[in-house]
Length: 275
Image (cartoon, rainbow, N blue to C red; front, side, top):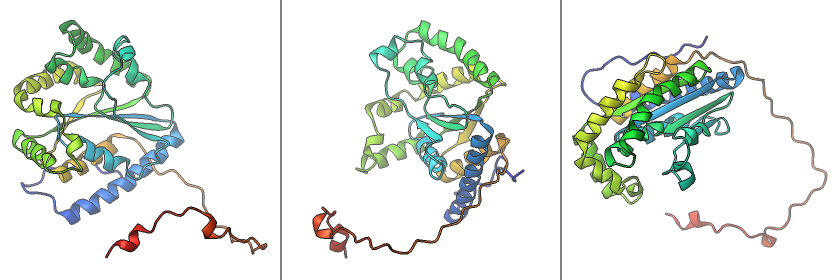
């Protein structure tokens, strides 16, 4: 069995150095590839849920996990607001459609827990719908686990000061401004409401079969390696022998002549304009 990293120990205050972060992240990403190979070979089904406040670092962590995985067998599920048809369905129905089949990994960038968070706080669901969710969610997750799904749930915890700083940096960055929505800004004024909603959610859904794991995420680099290391430590993967691949020798030419470039529409050489 391949050596798997355990949950990271607490370190003294201070940011993780860039070199240590990059070295460990690459090692963990190599382990994730091994985990995926095992998942495919064993037919395992892995679901990882990422929840937390806006700007808590969920998206960056998901990107690092998915970076070197085979996208045919590892998917990111980031659902938009429900359609009119989906609103008329059983609440969990549209999420079920995104669950993995044998050999697949699904990373939920937010999940069915939207109902316990933003929908509840912002009044997008009724009190009856909210109460029904808190009752049904543990039952739903127990069924998933009972059926063999490896379900992991992570809550990314960020302080109000760090969240504020990240929001402000997004306002000034045209490449990341899309990450900032009116809903995100509304969350600033409803900080305590979201805190109470999270506490109630944990009380009802932190079950032995599918516990919540909290990731301290004021330091994004530390949060990423901590979360990935923990995920790997909870999955019983091992090295799977891979077929030996050898590049064949190129055959000798049989007289093929390439079509003249002048007959093709080439992409302009934009790089030539750079200095």
